[in-house]
Length: 127
Image (cartoon, rainbow, N blue to C red; front, side):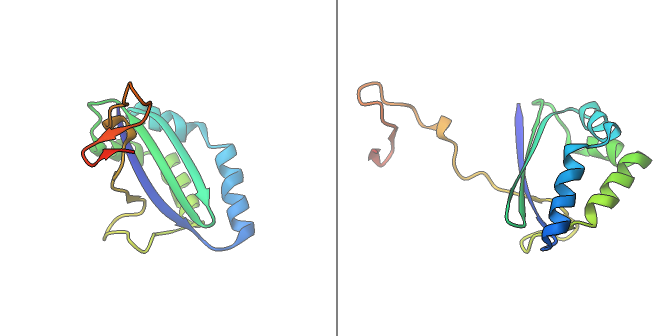
């Protein structure tokens, strides 16, 4: 499984944020079906204030270029256009990005658990 993490900001308007959330409690079937059809196994979005964090799970062989087939569907284009009315690019977005990719900097599974103490061993000692 591959995991992609991304961030996006919302327009700073509590009523618009609530409307955005309502839309996501009733996502159009064409959107979810389209995402599954291109190989997205899971997608979750969290919110902190006006910042959104999205985690996307795919198969190991997922090619992000597949997104173009999803994006070319008129109904998903309509959904994306509607969602963009609520969204703002993050200050750290690169040219041409809407959702900004996030760099993974920590993964606990990369550290073996010490069997003696139940703590995690790493190069700098045990913590």
